Length: 135
Image (cartoon, rainbow, N blue to C red; front, side):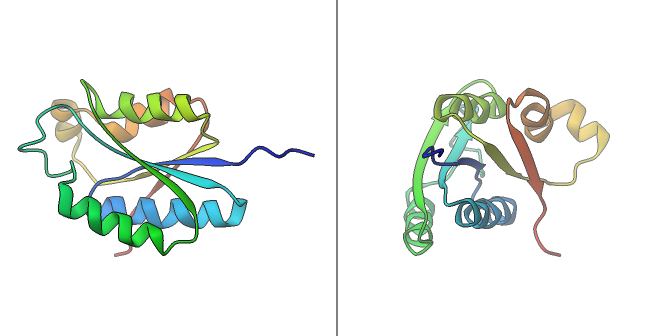
C-alpha cells in the first residue's frame, strides 16, 4: 500500500488564468486525496509585474484556500525565469502534477516575452495540465 500523498503544484497569478489553474488544481487534489503547492513567481520586476501578488491578493488567496478543504502551501519566489521557478518548486516537492493557466498569445508575443507555459511543458518531469478560464 502506498501512503505517499499526491502533490499538485499550481502556477498561480492573481487573475482569471491563475483562478482557473487554482480551481482545477484543488479539484485534482480532492480527487486524488492530495495536497496543493501554490507558486506565485516573478522575474524580479515585482513593482511592475501584475502577476506577482501583493499582500491583499495573498490574503484573499489564503481565505479562499482555507475553505477548500485541501492541504495547501503557498510559495512566492523571484528569479530569472518564472517557468524555471515553477519547475524548481515541482522538483523540490516531488510533484505528481503541475497545473498552469494558459493564456492566448501571438507568435510575436511568445518570441519577445517567452512563454512560461512552454517552459513548464517542456521542462517538467511530471504531468502538466494546462487550463483556460471559462469563456
